[in-house]
Length: 81
Figure 1 (cartoon, rainbow, N blue to C red):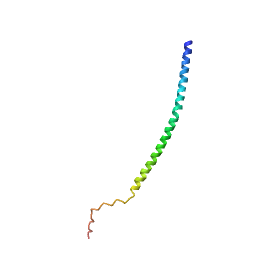
Figure 2: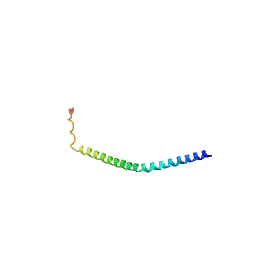
Figure 3: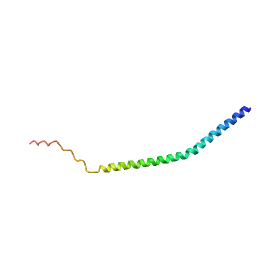
Figure 4: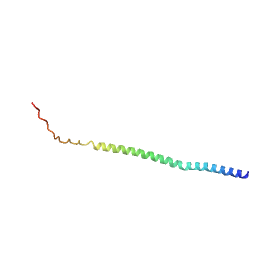
């Protein structure tokens, strides 16, 4: 009977300890996760802006003078009468 009571207290201590550990870990890691999520969103936003700038700058560099045509090497065939 006494052994069963001791085992009950051990079981209760383990359960309360595990619940307390889970709560403590969530309190300590919650703000870090929030900070990481905000930083991730900021970096993805900056990435989109920079990609748009790269695309805009490469398009504007193509607007210069057009490339001249290659010289045609063929001649017209004479018309038969």
